[in-house]
Image (cartoon, rainbow, N blue to C red; front, side):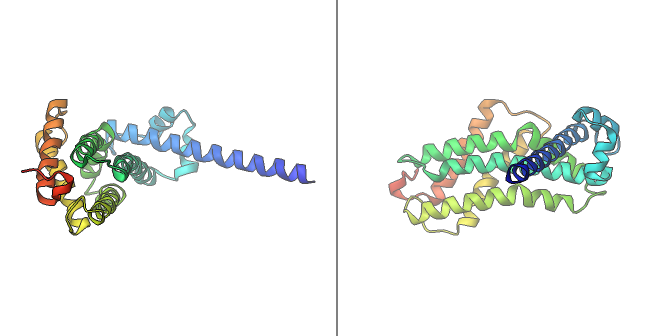
Length: 224
């Protein structure tokens, strides 16, 4: 009896895992197709082929094209956020050289926000703002808000340890991200031009220099 029960439970977990994996494959494929074709031109059949599943399977998992689009965009937003949060996590133990740690964070964060997935996400969100006006807020909540909140937590800890001056960590995080993304958006012409590595390094260096001039303490190697 127990062996049968264990076998049934294991089979159920396998089935559940398979369903989750298939759903993720569909969402990944949908985002790829929507990014390539746009919402209006993309068709569910093409998404099914991209995912390697039957068209009916797509409908069974996501019900209709509109829901598929929303879910695909939010899944892509979560993936971008995960990349950004992993970068912020590197600041948990910055070591003795805070400027170098901040420079590393800035360069890696720019790689995230100017990456193909992040650019496609912004393009899709803004292109469909008339059809899905609530999606901009949703994407921001899933990406920039989560990343900035995590960065604020790191800055709060650095402030408590005396490596940054006493400040509003949420405001400091918001300003740091603006120092990175503002110039990156301008130089990339709103994502239509890929930034060379030299420009990415220049933007990162300028952002860190400006930020540390405003927030670093003497013990952390305040510039200027």
